[in-house]
Image (cartoon, helix red, strand yellow):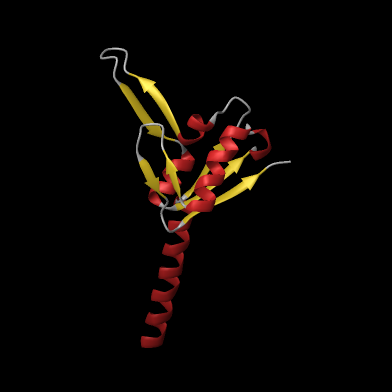
Length: 115
């Protein structure tokens, strides 16, 4: 019976790890109008106060929190956006449009799809 319990715990643990990995998978559909800034963060302005708010894109979110991002449409990116992507891939950090510097999480991964 102890063996059965261990097997059940192992199975539960593997399922939990699989589930965690699935949760950390993000899709980012790219398009030709995306510049380097748009690849990293989206800026919105509050109409009432005029304050600017920066929001992470799926790429930056994955770099900040770990996990995998699928970049769909890599072939459509402009050279400035490709350069900022290359920087984080090669050096593991990115200078964000809001003025901060982000060091990529250890489990940060990128899958690129293009044609």
